[in-house]
Amino acid sequence: MKINQTINATPNFQVLSEDQIERIFFAALDVLARTGCRIPCAQALRLFDQTDALVSDRDRVRLPPAMVEQSLRSHPRKFTLTGRTGKYPLRLQKDQVHFGTGVHIPSVPGAQKGEGLSWQETLTHAAHLADYHFNIDFLTCHGCAESPEGKGEEKKKFLTLLRGCTKPMLLSTKDTHGLWEQWRMASILRGGEEELRLSPLFILQITPHSPLVFTPEGVEQLLFCADKGLPCLCFSSPVAGVSAPLSISGVLVQTLAEGMMASVISSLHKPGLPFVLGGNFSFGPRAGGDLCAGQPELSLTQAAFADIVKWLGLPVCSTGGCSEATGLGQQAAMEMATSLYYGFFSGTNLVQHVGFLNRGRDLSLDGILLCDELIGMIKQIGKGIDTEEEYLALDVISEIGPGGEFISSEHTFRHYLEWYQPKYIDRTTYTTWSGLGRKTMLDNIQQERMRILAEYTPESLDPGIEHELIRSIEL
Image (tube, rainbow, N blue to C red; front, side, top):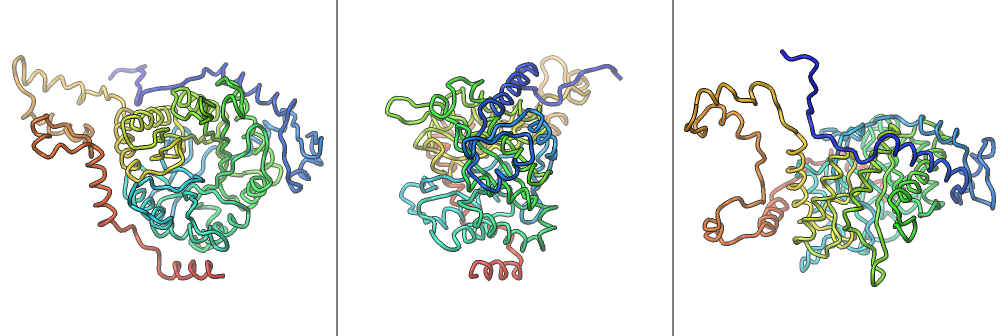
């Protein structure tokens, strides 16, 4: 037995040193003390009345560092989302990585040209695919232009997702009333408000308006989450050179400052909110005014932000598995793979926007399947290399000897299935591939998607609970 040994069970990856993280954190504290944020919400502003915060110009709030550091310590270091059935828990704790689709997309999701899917069909299909695939851990409610407007919109979407997927969810909503509807339905499903508090079904995303402005609706939803113990993600979307400095460190400082302000607001109202910090970083503008979303700097920035948030002891969220490309082709595969790789090895807890195209605006159902394959390959790399005696294979090498073959050995049989088995990648010869019809990887993906949607049925809702949920929509 060898003692005093160091073994890497998995590959190690970190962008920033602790000294760099501290400099960014201290700079973010300076931003909140010198510059502050706009908080246009009377309820939130009243929370600052009996504190050392300084409120000026009606709604500009500046904070002393002590307030910020105290609030950051009020959040749990880990919590769990359990989903509808509890079979697929999301443990949001250091270096536990989960992948899912993305929220609040303004255009019609799907990107399935020629299929003419309605909003409900798209949501249903996305829910079924997320429920079916092992490497997709959570589902989101995709905003879209074709979704029903007016009374009951949030409830109808939520019920569609509950019927189609048993996994946890990441949601967003237009206003606090929509959030209340989702929370009430989740309470019905869980059997009460307190049960939902202990076993949350979903996490809510709020998005500040960079630079350093919170919307009244976002702050109200943050306060609702703090009151109900509903997990909340503060997910900034800065555009470097437009709504944030055109430097990676500057973007990190501003994004962290926005997230820490949300932390202070929630802890002043009620300490203990299950809280996640995140960012959707982009760089622009480029020629023509379009935003860039595919540069390698984006993945680097998100990995660095993960270093910072993990250092603070909080869960972290970023984007990954999405592409600037308008179609699911070579560019999309490159950009999806890069962002998924960095998201995984940086230890990002929630990697959202898996399967999105067109600068993250359109959900591709086929993109979900492609990313499931990519995630599987990345997880295989993440397993690292075992150097125990069985894997060093000294006995089998000695037994077979020079000039022998390992194909028929028991050692090969035992370890064969430990190697990654692709679903859609073709590893045959050119002759075999040509003889089988020259199917591309995308052909294989599309064929499998149609098979899944035709044959797979998620676990059904309890009939009594479903009836009660339908009644709540009709109210």
